[in-house]
Length: 88
Image 1 (cartoon, rainbow, N blue to C red):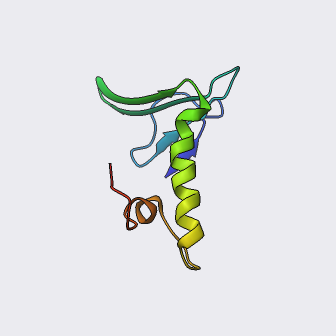
Image 2: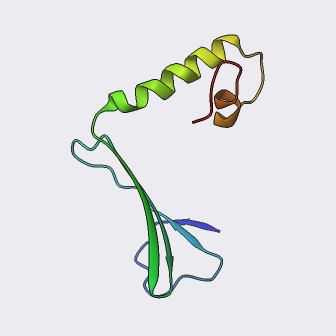
């Protein structure tokens, strides 16, 4: 179960609960952190973008994909695996 925020709750989370938090502020363009925490340890995966131009390549690739794709529901994987695209 996903729980957005804690609304003042203290103490350990229930075993099946996953906490999700979002913070926005100032001139931050993109600072994304995935934190996997366990008892006495954690693992972090972080991506920091200092300029919105960092997102432009993906936005342009998605725009090119939808101009040739037929009607339907698509995922990022569909776009990345389209002919002429190499999955990086």
